[in-house]
Length: 435
Image 1: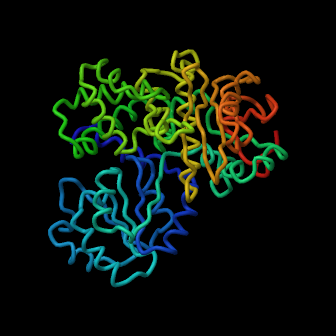
Image 2: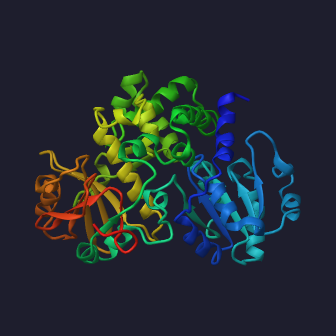
Image 3: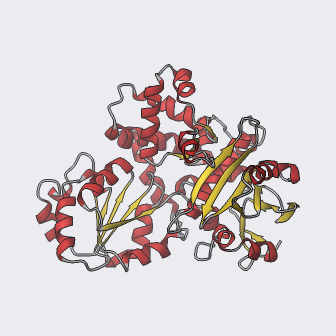
């Protein structure tokens, strides 16, 4: 086994730190309601840790392997399940798809809630098998790296974004607080929010992220597609990370490293399937245009983006040409993590015009649009909400909530008639000191 493949589990044991996860409440509700829950997410975001911490001795845990047939589960799934009590956690179940038809039969006979928890770090592997075998019998819970909400010790309370979507007036009247973070802005973005990268000594973070990428490529991406040149795929992943927070251009991605646009599109699908890349579709008042517009792409973690850009120290982040994109990636990640806890989730878009007006994020919920601009500046003004104003002018028939400009500012305050600056590390004011 390569040394780099050994680093990640060793690091996890070294930390000895557990940060409470906001997903635990939703996990509990789902287990109390459904016979099987699938917890999905990228490698090393804490899926197993979340389950072991919240299920503990009540559950039986089995971790599957892409090479070894653990406990003969692939060869004799019936006998395997007979030998385990419920609740049973089947970790990285994409490596034992033979279990799924047997689980289907057992669930059909016994619909008691909380019997099985399946985890996986590959959307294609998990979702394809589950869609075929357990459709209508399971629910999904997505998990990512830490959120600011969690690292400030506020996981059990409502996220400020949930409050904003319920009632912007409540937030504008009461203000928001600022969460206490382990690191400052630049180091937080540089480390990112993968649990181990967030907790390691600074001098080992780059080594961890290097090992993370190699482990991901050699264990996850390799199983999804027939890629002839894995070194080239690694360069492609680093290039995609360096182009985070931009509209997706397959021709540019391919041309820069000498692959065809079709290959670039296929490799980007691999990154999406393994939770390393997220895309936000374009919005238009015309449904056809909404579908055909170019999406905006984001690497999953700002720390991976900084590593891919060879940013060696946190203090180099604000002077880097990609500083704004790195900050936007982190803020979009926080928004994405908050929205993952809602059911149903709001629709998320970006909006731009040929004339240059743009809104980074548009959240659509219950017929109302919530515009969000992301600016890497500490002193925003009304001009920073110009894209939001242009959106209101373009679509006067829409119900549009007050706009937010999320930035590294010191306080929540009004910057124009119906738009507000929001600190990037905001928390509900009832939980922290009011700004």
